Image 1 (cartoon, rainbow, N blue to C red):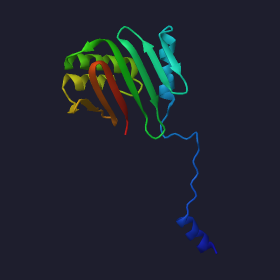
Image 2 (image 1 turned 60 degrees about the vertical axis):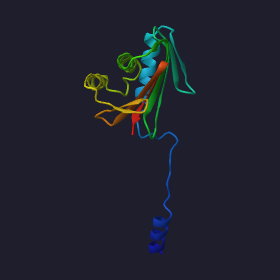
Image 3 (image 1 turned 180 degrees about the vertical axis):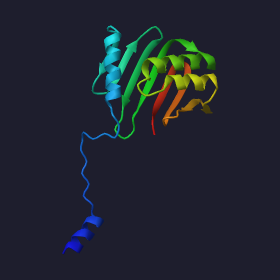
Image 4 (image 1 turned 135 degrees about the horizontal axis):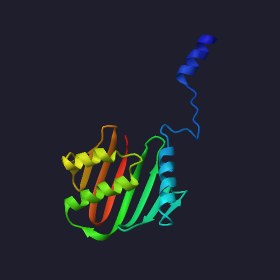
Length: 153
């Protein structure tokens, strides 16, 4: 009898998942949101259901989304007041945006070093940065729009 039970368990394992289980600590994004809302004096707003932070600052309108249970990551979309035409201007703004809105997951000193050393891969219109802590960031720009996606893969 115990042998049949053992075989049954091997063939039909019982797996239980909890809705509250996450393999990554989402608290880092929550802490970022709280700190941003506290310091931006009404320039930032947060939509809890979409996990989206919207900020109007001197550059334009910035939206940040972060989450992850199986894939911790985030997105920064910036709609700028002035169009970007040169790669060097894009990279300078990219560093500024990630320092302000992505430092909860992106190592900005490491990004700065990669930009200075031109240590990225360009795939079509995307710049791909791979960090030492397994974070991958893809960034692109088109006139007044910068898109940044990053996460632990």
